[in-house]
Image (cartoon, rainbow, N blue to C red; front, side, top):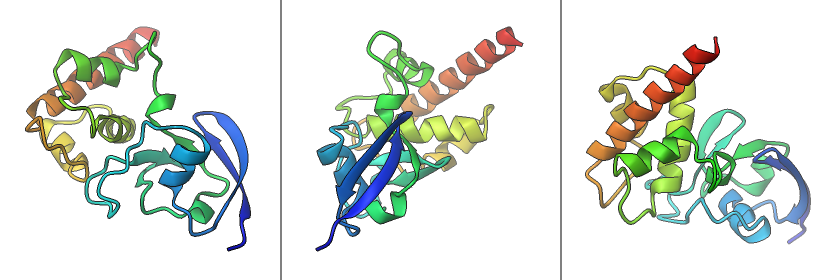
Length: 163
């Protein structure tokens, strides 16, 4: 199959690469850009382990063709923090035990990041509804919700202090 030239901005860095138009974004991220934070889970969009932010929306990268992502701005878990400077969501998931095996965590945090951009003061119900497309087989979700609430409070406090 003929490959096409893609231009992607991933975690703030521009990339030009060749990919088959039918190639999935998750494979481009993992195999061509070596970004292994988004995980391949169900490959049917049910689990959310592959969730990334694309052009200001949460998408499941296992259902987005490379051709559809051409020209897109994408943020993965690798773009949210670093080992020396965790994003408030990463810190809250650690602090509030919002993870166990960790397989779903990158997709959970990436989705939660978009959720908090859309709604900086979510209720527990808002979080449960907003995170419904991301599944976890280990935690029972309560600590994930607590972590997102804590991160929202921290992010809002930082924002208020800066104003």
